Length: 492
Image 1 (cartoon, rainbow, N blue to C red):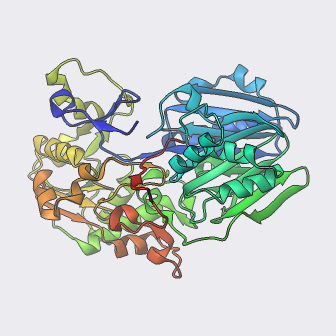
Image 2 (cartoon, rainbow, N blue to C red):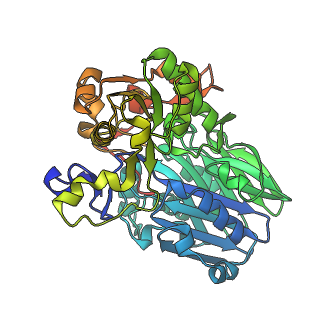
Image 3 (cartoon, rainbow, N blue to C red):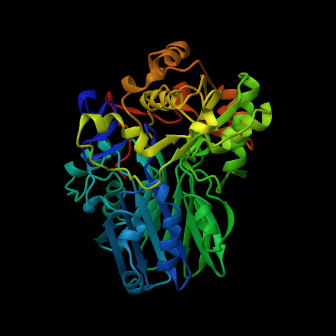
């Protein structure tokens, strides 16, 4: 189910997911999934465990690993964090030299074990397991077509569509997969596994990240390079838009299932989602975020006493802003990492204090000071207002907010959990109006040109330097409207 906002009398405007029963004091966008694959390594399950643990930030709802020994599948999935779903005995039971793994954060699919990935099926050619990061925009149309043809779906996950497309094809597995992938519209990174083959595919626009590495004689695939670093694998390259890699007993074969479209890697991966120790498209995320902060300082300098970043994703940008301006960087805000995403607030008084359970202002740092507060984005504005007020309560005399992305005006259709357009504060308010809404002394957003320049390594032959900025400029790289029905979020 889509996310809904509970009336402020109940949750004081906090973000609440009716399907999962989870609330989040931080009004942040959510990535939907992380994928990790291993081919040709005898310890595939343990490597997948550590790789998924490194990708935990991409999905905290469920985790799963499916392993093949060349003859049969062994798999386990569960709700919760990777460390909660797997233990040593479970990993030892998942023997084999090929595996795919998944961490999930659902946005439009139901939060239940049947939707946990990898999804595992049996069909005429044997076993099939699928793990996906992203969103199939034309899933409703394909599901309707398949159901009319007799397919019976077992989940509400859009990933199941490709399994039915493959199963209904008279072609062999690889050709059926190519045919199925070519029918999908959206942003996605796929790992598909049979008993003896691993297929790796990226969408034609490269919207969702996927990278390849080497570990000894084996291959590793992950949503981010940080997952390779933790197991000692050497990153090799990103999977190209529209590319299909086939790994079997004959080794690695590079192929395509379609011609590449307009290159459009999601800009929010650089701004917020990916870990700062990951590299993407030749650029380190920490360094890119520092450059965003530096560009922000050049575009919108304000005289102040201290610079602070909203933990954790804005720390790098805050350091960049401070270095560019010469204003001291300080830890003016501290995040409590042990609150968790779900907690009970038994009284209205405690509900009002909810933000303080996750974030604290350091009074000795901000009291009597003019503060520049750096953040990566503003979604609904509720969190920004609370953090500004938190700094004021701690004694800040001025709070100037600098956002290292353009105004977030449009929903994402490619796998990022975004609210309805009407809930996006920048879609209906000017910068001055937002500034007043969040109770800041001043507010500025990074320009699209500044963002593109800060990220670097861009493709001059593609719009926006090869980035997807649709959430900022409404320029979607694929078709998004099917019969008047806009599909948002991800049910992967």
